[in-house]
Length: 258
Image (cartoon, rainbow, N blue to C red; front, side, top):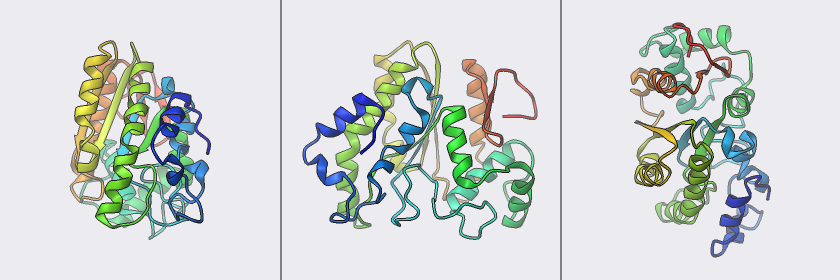
C-alpha cells in the first residue's frame, strides 16, 4: 500500500484494525487498488508542494470510478461525455464563469463547447496536472468506501479522521511562511473547519485561508464565486495565481486569468 508521506503512513498503520481498511477482494472496499488509497498525496509528492487543498467526501462506489482523487471519476475520460459527474461539471462551469467564458445558468451544451476550446486534456490528465504542476491536493474526508449504509459511512469517516488530520497538519507545518488555501465543499468537508482553525493557531507562521462553500453537486455552485475567491486569496498571499484551465501557476496577475 503505497504512501509517500512517511508520517501519514505511520499514522495509518498505528490505527486499530488498519489492515481492515486496506482494499482487498475479501472486504470489497473502494478504491479496489490499495495503491490508489493515498494517490492524491503521492501525486503532489510532498506536503511542501501543496498550495491548495480541495476536500470532498468519499470515493465513488464503483471499481472503475474510485481512483483516489476527490471528484475524479476514473471511468470517464472525456469532458464531452454525458456520464461526466454533475459535481465535476459544476466545478468546471464555476472555473469558466470566473473567466467570463460562460454564465452560471448556461446549459451543458455551452459547457461542452467552451471546454472543447479551453481544455485539451482528458479528465484524468487535468486532475493529475493540477496536482503535479499546481500543488492541488484532491482530498476526500474518507479515503475508503465500504457501503452506502449511514453506519458504514460513519465507521469509515471515524477511522480516517486521525489520518486526515495528520495529512492536514503535515501540509500546514510544511507551508510555513508560504500560502495555503483550503476549500471545504459541502457539509462533510466543513466539519474539518475546527481542526484547521486549531492548526492555524498552532502553526501561526503558516498563512492559511479557509474557503467554505456548498458541495459542487448543488446547482448554485457555478455562480457562487468559488474560483474568483481563490484568485483573490492567492493574490493576497502572494503565492502565485492558478490557471485552472491550463493547470499552471503564474507569478504575475493578468486580469483575464486565474
